[in-house]
Length: 184
View 1: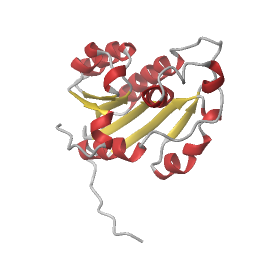
View 2: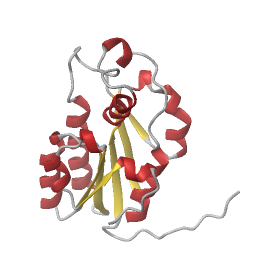
View 3: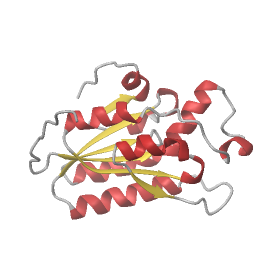
């Protein structure tokens, strides 16, 4: 068994990591084959793993100990991520779309959970969001109002510039998986 280095958590130093998982996966599919993921027959089938979970986890763990780790998605099509997600201790939040074009369910649930967690847990010092939607801009404002930090991770072509600018730190997913050292 590998030797583990333990870090004692300090007040206000823990990280809460929230993934808009299907959105990130969709962006990676789009980058591989433009127009492919938006087709209904592609979205509603078992998906091949594309997301490099370890790269994002490494970034967030460099900020502080990971206290909350949740990913939001319709998991019935993402079973091939099972081992990776379990290895990294991700709590999977199942979201069934209430309609064919329901787009913002994960964004809304993620934002509500993040704000509830900040109200409940004083030891959360940083909220990290994996997603590039402009829907996360109000979340950034609210997190800042609580005196906590906001860190974002997203794909360059799919990230809203205002969301990225309103984070204390924003990291391009492409840089993380390419091994580019993040600046905090």
